[in-house]
Amino acid sequence: MKWKLIGEFPKDLKKYVIIAVPHTSWHDFYIGLLIRKITNTKINFLGKKEIFIFPFGYYFRAVGGRALDRTPGQNKVEAIAKLFETNDELRLTLAPEGTRDKVSEWKTGFYHIAKAAHVPIVMVTFDFGRKQNKISKPFYPTDNMEEDFAFMHNFFKGVKGKVSHKSF
Image 1 (cartoon, rainbow, N blue to C red):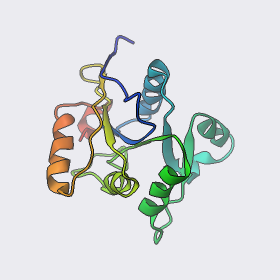
Image 2 (cartoon, one colour; image 1 turned 120 degrees about the vertical axis):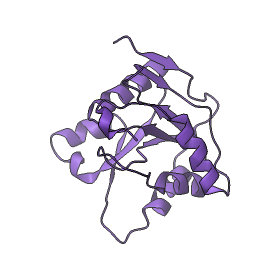
Image 3 (cartoon, rainbow, N blue to C red; image 1 turned 90 degrees about the horizontal axis):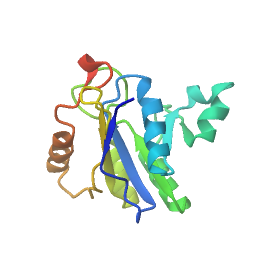
Image 4 (cartoon, rainbow, N blue to C red; image 1 turned 45 degrees about the vertical axis):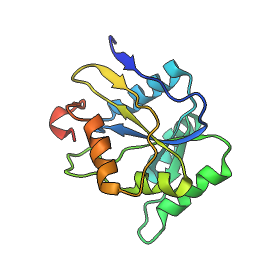
């Protein structure tokens, strides 16, 4: 496909949150699976529970998917952070936009999950403009959310998704 992979997932860490940006198309899913295969890294992902029904549910679970119940009133951050406690190895990919539509700001759940679980964040680009995926070094969130988000936004600056007008 003539894509470049820049950087690598940390080999010495078994637990971290991965954020993949921008998330503009279903094509992001197979790109993520290819990155995972090429790097030989076990990576899980969350998806809305509705995609885990027959017949695709079996496949999504087989490739590391975990269903997320998005019913309001639950403490999803706490529940997801607890997954890091109960698993010896968990590299969990999330899309900070929370949708494939254009957004002006990210949801903050991934950040709070990483902080609550005491794990770093690894950033991955889905850059269809340059045909490259760039993997960051682990980033440990601080107590300054504003600066942390500015740092992460900068990593994704100029990155174009498959549907470029929906890019962050």
